[in-house]
Image (cartoon, rainbow, N blue to C red; front, side, top):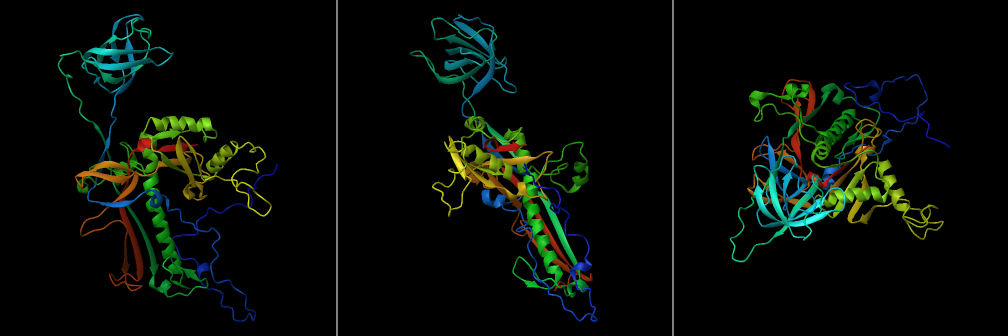
Length: 470
């Protein structure tokens, strides 16, 4: 069986360096040679479009922020369910006292509510009416509806939730009420910078390679290319910082290096919470390889059922994960083993054979698209340690309380907040300093092109995202 040979391979050595290269300019002025070579003056784009920035533009939005700290509130659950309750009452008892052992919660059940109890192991279940509640002890007492009494065994860990209430004629109303509880999250923006500098002499130096910038300007001045690539690189950093960012932890060297307590609204704050870190912390993670069967996706679907149940979801993935999904869907065809009938049906010899799928529906709508960032050989492509194969992003928007607007607002699940006010917009700043290239701001015989942005990513409803780790 053949394989892709390692030599010749692909180059990872960057072409960008901190110095002007002699190879960028004409150095052979040997007029004694009477033969003139043919030269291809235009660059050949051997790596195609090298930029990876597009993910956040596809799934999110950008909006201004006026603070060093961004906070938002997300809705909590409407109903209460405890998954670790036990009782010492034996099977057959007409009444029982149950203890709630769920971590970090207090029993909010109320007298005369009806409750469903189910053993976490086995088939036993009971229905009962609550007769007493002791919130300080985290217990509630019940009286069973069934004539045979309790069917769940003593000390068996069980699950309980309220499904209604029942009162006698002429009785008083429900005692106690429940207050809504929101979940509060926050993030902080980071300042991202870059710079390109070229001396006035090099700006006047002619090159032998014709270059083109992103605004369409072309010519034989090499600094045009370098400034253009610095801009593209900075735009990629804007996206990657929002995806890969992490918050500096206490005891880490970055916290001390990046914190200037005297001038920060948030003393001791450094770093920002990026997409991967957010989903790994308070979202869902599928680890140990890609889901390659419908049963694997069924486990994902069952988790989504327990979260926000967003109908449409997009999976941004690397090439191997994309092929795994194609192969999984192909096996659902009765002729999948032959490999010639799925994808584009009724194939003939003059028609391209489509062996890929754009998505599928199984409970939810799943669409897939390759994410160049995860495939790029100079970035996450080929990474082993800490590898990520894809991320599932819910489509649409969610309602949150916006503290700046002072009201509920619709926001995309993913969006970028950048610092801005009436006098300063830090979404994407660029300015030129020096005395060359039209700038006359200092005596420096050079042109400095500066780039700056200050931004943070807000991941709303992270519980609806899925991270696929290797």
